[in-house]
Length: 508
Image (cartoon, rainbow, N blue to C red; front, side, top):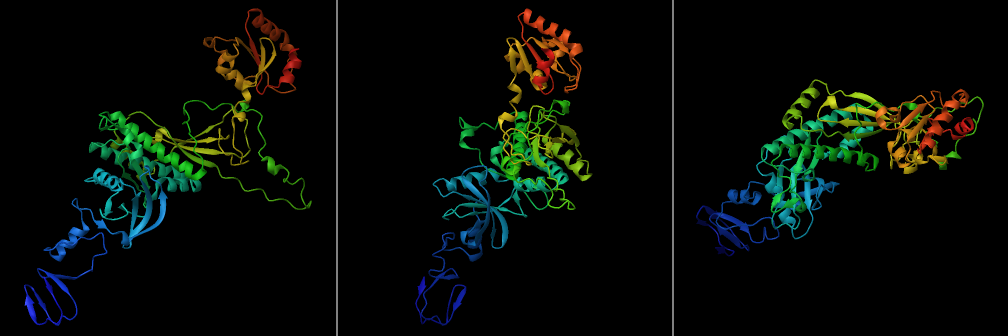
């Protein structure tokens, strides 16, 4: 009911009013507000007949108990990334001075639907490695968002990339914490009957080195006949999702640090490293555009140039997927115990790629190869960059020519080929040329000398150097070559580095 001005000294219900002049006051069961006080606030709806305390609580909560947060109280600080789905962006921000991570949905006709699907997916979940929703935008808000608690969070890939750049030991420890926390979170979701693929998770890391995951509904492409493809009653599928999520996060960290998206294959720890003697001629470690700028002499005979500081190694994460050795919960508990007693120590290996001729002195790549167990993990050091990688020494992109040099096997005459050790070790190189005999002028082992290989093999056990004397071996070598040709076969004559002139002169 409404009262006009100049009314005073009266009591109505629970309210007593005096000296009301020139104001129109609406009174509903003892609760009053000025007309127009909330008219411009789309996030608040007033209902007649509600006490103030109950009405305020209804304004701040939805039916499922989540707080409604007003857009005017939200401040975004900076964008983190696009998120695993294209429907939203992730930001750090504040709501009334409280730090939050904000998932802002794009302004389209399905924005509210995406928000409600995400909230429904997370409803009722409670786990230390799952991000907790602290509020959402109003249904009438022009911008739809979800606010998550924020204990100094950043996206996990960025902080993992920082660790890779700065410290090897921290990179290893942080990597195992990721394995432990993600396996714990996914194990909890699995126990709740939720089997979501890697693309349904955003992964964060807080200031206490704890990893969190926030959930997003599966993409429409993963829905088949009204059910999710990921919802398969198969324990192995849960393990596959865990492997895929770890690989996704670690590969993203590599991409953040190096601005390259290279797919790494985990090294086989049981295979021996190729001998250094298989290395092809190396390319120059000085970029072509820098060669003319190299000093030819010292400016003063008494002065010495200070040695250049060593270039830090290139570090990357590599995930080594495994089968289903034990439940995810057991993996999480075991790694957590190992970290508590500082037992997450991995062994170190060295590998050398004999098929690449791009060998800049000083190049080192440390691959932190992680698996669900420290026993299956290692730090593997490489001395050559891989295909499409930017060499940290010469800053050149490694192209296929650095790896295909072994293909240039020369045909000396019909049925007689000249090559190097890498070509001789390549079964594909031999079979493509229908080679039946292999004459090795070196001491290195190769598959063709094994009886089960199907090749006929002869070895001249001398080093590939100009001072080596082949004369004493010449009769036997010529006899072996003639036998290959007379039986309709083809022969590869090779040394370590295909010193073709040297071999041709000696065998002529």
